[in-house]
Image 1 (cartoon, rainbow, N blue to C red):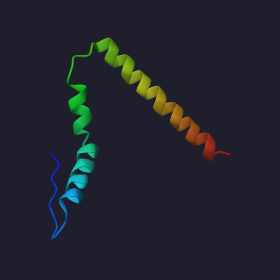
Image 2 (image 1 turned 30 degrees about the horizontal axis):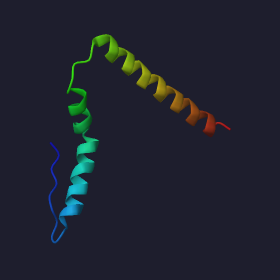
Image 3 (image 1 turned 90 degrees about the horizontal axis):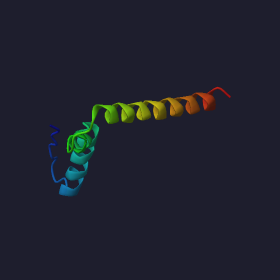
Image 4 (image 1 turned 135 degrees about the vertical axis):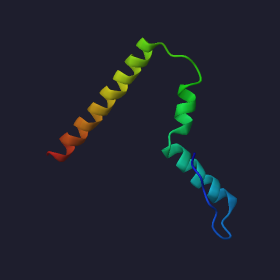
Amino acid sequence: MPKVVGRDSEPFDILLKRFKKRCEKAAILSDIKKNQYFEKPSVQKRREENVAKRKMVKAMRKMKRFNR
């Protein structure tokens, strides 16, 4: 669980913003959303394959841009 320690005279808004960023980096919200409902194994596999394809396409575009 992410923790945030407040500094002297630091506004609450900034503390909250830092806490939200740490939660986002720890992937807490995405994990909670993922476990809200049951997903069939075939659907989960298909979703993970789509994520992998998108990552590969993004990496290929990045490599093309640097290899010019």
